[in-house]
Image (cartoon, rainbow, N blue to C red; front, side):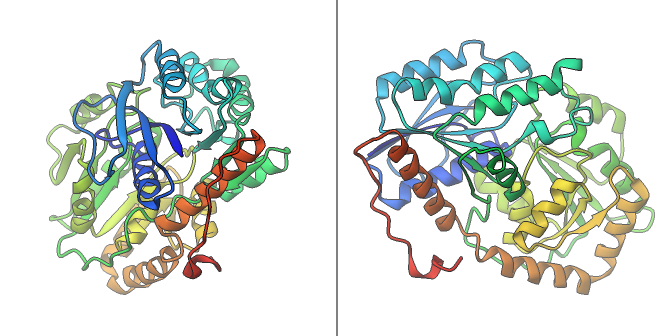
Length: 396
């Protein structure tokens, strides 16, 4: 069976691209596919990541590329696969709403070409706080969000990484499947860090709350002069100059390390050095893969009390020390409590490490194989994946 995957992809580390890489890796290891071709998008030049076996990775589009849709459609037609899986977010095609709307037509257009389609949608912008996200479009933003949902959910199967989103779509008669992000690697309980270091690891954008964290860090250093803050991740395509402006505003603030792009194989070391992972987002567009990574590697989490963050924690049985959204004092107090109390950190870490055991990448892969089979069935394809669920996963 030939599977084609359309996704953002490393070497650029974005949440959706990293997810695409790890699910691709699991699918390649499953042994069910004679050929896997990734039509990869990345704004960072470099070689494809390791551990993908014989998977073919073609870097054929980039965010902001005007003809990305045409290039992808042309390659799908040439490849003639049995099924196409799209791994999408609302803004992966760049900062232009029209480019993103155009890109999100791909599952429908590929379906019309006769190919079974599965779409993973990491965001339901229709449910998001568009003003807090600085969404383009002005008075037309809400209309665009509804159109985006309508277009994206025409795929044969739609997969959502939050149960709340899947339930919302199911209530609207959309056939969908909940596939939590889960653990990318076998969970490993890292030793507690010997240094007081905070980790902020995400795509950099104004609604990620970094300004809030920088101020809390500045204040906390009066109590813990050695407190460090590591900032890692690439810029969001809609805010290409954001990081430079923020660095200029920070000036000579001490104890801050700006890493920018991080290679996939080095991500574990970010968490190894960190004592607390901070998610200070002022608005959210979906599930946080960083929350799962913190749980997988035994790191305490401080997070904004956004509805999406609370839903995500509850859906997965994860504990997070929540603070009041946009409140520096609340964030500072939460971080202070976690630093000062090894017992509080340990209680959270142990709970989350137990929870993440039931969300391993093998189960994520199996759920996709089921979704693939359903899409093949709906398109009346003679091809099927002969599934056999491992015994240890049957009750999960």
